[in-house]
Amino acid sequence: MKFGVVTFPGSNCDEDMVYTLETSLGQKVERLWHKDHDLKGCDFIVLPGGFSFGDYLRSGAIAKFSPIMKEVIAHGQKGGYVMGICNGFQILCESPLLDGALLHNNSQKFICKNIHLKPKSSTAAISKDLDFDKAYKIPIAHGEGRFYAPEDTLKEIYDNDQVLFQYCDADGNVSEEHNPNGSVDHIAGICNKSKNVFGMMPHPERASDENLGNTDGKMLFESILNNLS
Image 1 (cartoon, rainbow, N blue to C red):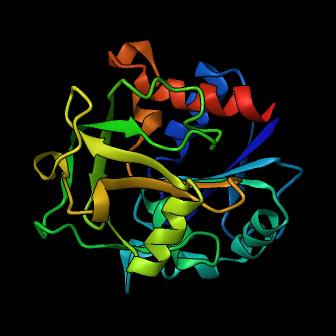
Image 2: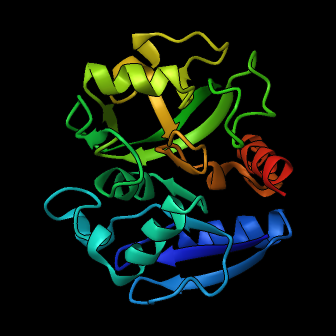
């Protein structure tokens, strides 16, 4: 499988993602620029974290108009794999690929810290192989990470097993106390109905190397590789 990592003006996690995929996981990676008009034969596209176009208007609202997004959207709509992390998740929610929206954190502050995630979807590739009784320690770093969807959309998301992760404590207990941004139902990530487009606010690429003292995030990528290869 060939991965493509897109860089937008303001991306700051693109090289983290490239390192994780290439060095930690031994995958072939192509660097893609936001003005590119083709995906260069990539099977799996990653939209990394950062502050694309300075987060003007809304986070991800301008990046969705970058030339490469026409190709990314077409790729996802045809069943190709797409993953958005943090700002990438915001871009996917601004595009037609994922439902819902990412709003300002309920604290109105930028939050940067380690949190814990509980896997939810038993059918999505990114969570399928994870231990559903385990809490995974993954960093977050965002100011607009509060996931929101209206009740009818939220019902569809749950009916289709599209909730990937929920915020929880170190023991896996889901509670308001450990919801860092006020996301509805503590949702930290979702996928589309076809389970080929994934979005999440936490940064698994920042928890995928032994030198960082945390490899919980690597398990998410390994689950993807095990279920898509």
